[in-house]
Length: 315
Image (cartoon, rainbow, N blue to C red):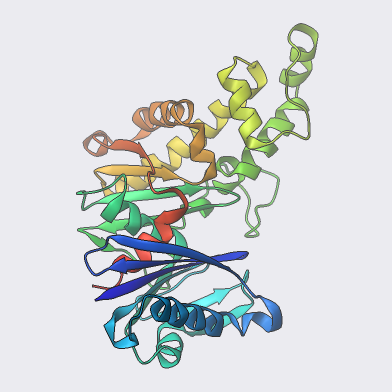
């Protein structure tokens, strides 16, 4: 028997064919067709999966089921509560997909939550039953595993740590409509935003007199981290701000969830040790002592975490 893991993104859909024991056989990628409010997406995926089975000389009856990660909140019953990036509203993705794929079992979850399950089953969190994962990319997402199971929350929004308020003095607005969310500091766009704001402060002006920063207003998050590693004062200050807010958010999460491991993934995590060191320092200063014994780890599966986690939804 085999099963599929599907990770639906705004640009591409990644799929993986897995053995029933979770071993990846082969992975694929198809474009995301968002025309007509995304009405073709499910059909495109099911056609693709049928073609994969045909190519492998397999019948649909040899497939155990399909797990799907989606860029929006999904509750424990399989109801997707809107996917703006895909043009989708509210409907039961599991029932709809199963109808179009031979009635096979289908399980769905939020993409960050599903990626967390992937890291717990096959990546950095292997063997750990209580963990939190945070994904630092264009935005900030997250997921929670408690006693080996995904925590969905009432509306499928558990783990949305990116919109945890961390700065009540913030004047800029987050994409969610609030101010002072973690995403404004810990995402790739947030890192660049902080660097630009520092350039406009007295700190940035003083640097121009004594130390010309290698950064400019067109910098990327990667350039900020590279400059910080090279000793650039403004870049280092930016990373310190990131560490302060991310460490604070994770300390708060740890006081509620008491995880044994915190996994950091997403594009920003490629900064590596400089990021982990700064976050862990602030975390340890702020966390409730009984919740302090936490392992910080970088995600291992990269862009494949979503398909691994989606496949793991099918038992």
